[in-house]
Image 1 (cartoon, helix red, strand yellow):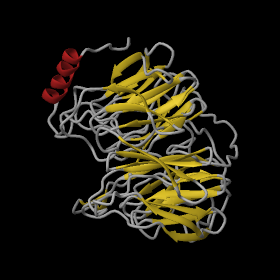
Image 2 (cartoon, one colour; image 1 turned 90 degrees about the horizontal axis):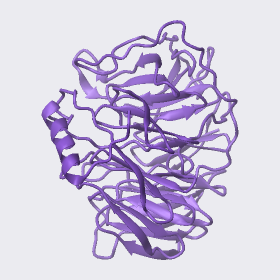
Image 3 (cartoon, one colour; image 1 turned 60 degrees about the vertical axis):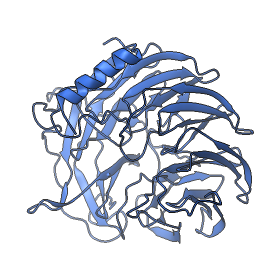
Length: 452
């Protein structure tokens, strides 16, 4: 499928079509012991089920499909940005066979009725950095969890309440932070001293991406921006179609090989030159056949993933796509709606749908390898306590997914078999950071937990 080059008027026509078509997140190891300690439940075979409701059904490919093969696990010393590195393609990472909790730390204010934790932890140069729901940034020693410094970024005239948005990134001895106060801030990573602060057009609900001496952000009013990492000067701005409504959260840009990919709440996906912001190609990640009430939200909240010359993106409106980075042409598309960043390893792409299905897809062809149903309700009989799953993360031949109900699962990346589960202290809505064989989870209560 050729990429769509859309003018504002043509784009609004596509958006209207989408609205008419439908109105509108325990880890264990193999064997008898839990990966995180405690007992496991019996293994559950992967089940072929419907991933999308209504008239769209996903079925795994025929039995003659090629066996899933993954690259060998490799260690990584840092996890400096949301999604790992700037391209978000972390492949196959290393963690221990039986990780245990080595420390816990209080990272500040957790999610509440008026604010939410949206920034995942990052790891750089032996430290873990977080930003809480009141725009307080903290640095912890990765070895023992000791807090090294803490800095509040709320402006003097703000109370720090009702903040939505923000995230952190580490690069070159600095911590870059986006906030719901429509500001981008650089801090000295050693002591939290503020180095510069830049006001932007509107709040930022996704973490920044740092690459090539530039800090890339997407604002709530759908402005893609590049700032100079040295002093915060705005270098260029790209404007997408502004939306009146969007999902909570946002997608940090993906950057690699001189190109930055911006994903907007309008469903627009744009590849830009990193140095100048000149557009290279664009696409519209829209599906017009959904009939559920939220289908008119075309938001791309999941981070795009750049893997060499391939780009993978999933949108809320109902498409998972593989794109040629050089031309912008679609190699394939699957009718799957998602909010979580897909995970690519070798020739396989893993994704979680909004219907709580964990799916393995052939990254070259888009063929479905297997589909596994994850629990959707804490009380299935009464259908109460909606569960959202986060992930997946691939480490040492295990896919890790966590739920807002305080349960984590490990799943075989080869077959979709559920290997086990464990109860966690509280719910988790953010993907973990993985660095130096350690998993770092930030819970909804802002507890930072390290497993090694």
